Amino acid sequence: MSFGFFRNLTKPKPAPVEEREHVVAGRSLPLKIVENDRARRLTLRIDSGGRGLRITVPPGLRRGEVEKFLDRHQDWLEQRLAKVPARPQVRPGIKIPVRGVAHRIVHEPSKRGTVTVSLDERGPLLIVHGDRIHLPRRIADFLKREAKREIEKLVVKHTEALGKRAKAIRFKDTSSRWGSCTSDGNLSFSWRIMMAPSPVINYLVAHEVAHLKEMNHGPKFWKLCEQLCPDTERCKAWLKRNGGALQAIAFE
Image (cartoon, rainbow, N blue to C red; front, side):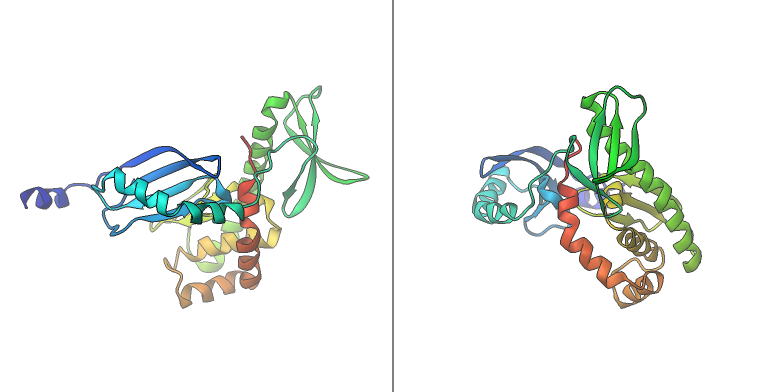
């Protein structure tokens, strides 16, 4: 009793996390096992794009129970992962979208620089300079720079309309969500959103900015979101339908 009492007076410790690999239909995926004090049962989630698995468990649960849980849900995992688009590797010759427009990747190792946007008779190009091994990272860095440039402007636009201020804006490569807003006003966005059409990028920013006033997904929040982005429903549906394919693109 006293242990529980004093534990409540101290700052909560981070949830214990165990990381390992789990094989599904011959495919090895990163697996995170996370203890949550509020969890009453085991929950299993597939990260967006099929990039990994996450199990949330009650504290103190024996790992043997986790293994049994995984065994019981192996068929479910196989069925769900079979529907996940294959992970195309960023490489010369393939096309990736930038603001919803497909750009063909061209590698020019003899030139200096990073990534430039160009156009030929076949359509838009992303020209990547330098060593081939750095090509995926340089395209990812290009998308990060584009995200910072465009999203910061959109945050200013929507926060001014809302009469709120964002404390900070951060960019990450998150697999479980496209954006987030903390109670103290920190906004985070996945730089992968720069592959979506411009109206969808605008919707995502409006969505997270609306959370500065409404930290929920209730009717007031969605009304506010519609005020900031009248195309909310169509863009939300597009992201739900196509987001997995964008998350699946491999920049490693």
